[in-house]
Amino acid sequence: LYPDHLVCVTRENHPTIKRALSQAQFLDAYHVVVYYPEGDMGIVDQLLIQRGAQRRKIAMTVPHFITAAFAAGQSDLIATMNSRVAEHLRRPARVRVLKFPFESPQMNYGLYWHGRQTADPAHTWLREVIIDAAKERPR
Image (cartoon, rainbow, N blue to C red; front, top):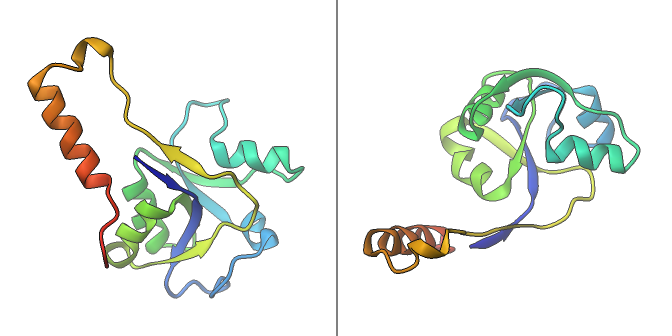
């Protein structure tokens, strides 16, 4: 569907994080993360460990990236998510979108389905709607 990359979101008037986010600030801050099973690590913590950094200080877990952005927008927490989601939530959640302070791979989002659904008219329609929604739009 599209390639993307990680970014961080903070509230617009964060007391210590302004226009850029350093690695030290990222590791020092408390984070809101989208839930993953206890004991498992999300992609961000896997990247940090691969680079020899510590895991994040997780203050809150939430079920969705939308919730994470709004929590970051109303607190001093940091949320990490893909840039497309962050850009859509920038205004409604009142967050600042900042570059992820560590090197991270490009993430490629795709659409997958079971082969027996390929000819199903309803499934075909749904795939077309999703593909159209994922297209870049002029701002």
